[in-house]
Image (cartoon, rainbow, N blue to C red; front, side, top):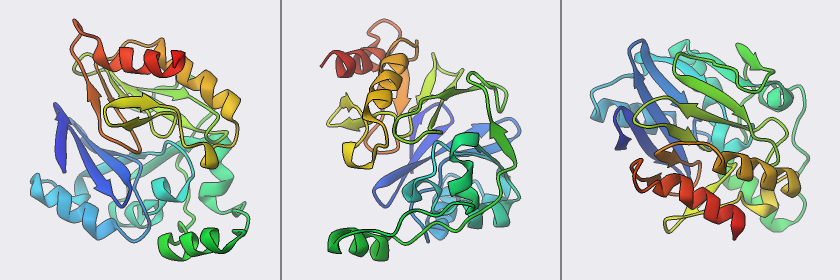
Length: 229
């Protein structure tokens, strides 16, 4: 667990990142990582002198297993309120199940990663620009999934939680992984939209954070470069 910026911590859970935000009212998690890793999250919180009991809200970026893998368990253990977009709700609640994997590699991946346990959503995001918590704005950034949401936190010059609407590789911002993206054209539009925002820091579901002060604008410029190629 490392502190990316004031009160925002990043924990790598498998190959995906979980983000912890310290607020006046407790801890906010953005995504929950691969299934079966709740103990890892709990231990990481202890290292920063925090506990699962302080988690009050879990913000979901999208329904993929590597982002909601521990959602059900953490909701049970913490009593936290779960917030996600309505367009991804059926996958999170289990009303719709992912198609069975095709091919040996895909089947092996499911066996290794596991499946996310369905769980209830306490609050659905149905409008763009919704404010789920003080200081947070939910931005509907579809493409990777229909209900993908990025979150912008009004702190330290602006902190973007991009989820899988973008990724970071060796300090460079890219679009989401093509093989797992439902609608590449809409994903490109969402990436372009994020590039129009103002923020000093960006964190991702995959890859290291990108930061830069208001003078250099490095975080925003990295997004704009990703859009223009």
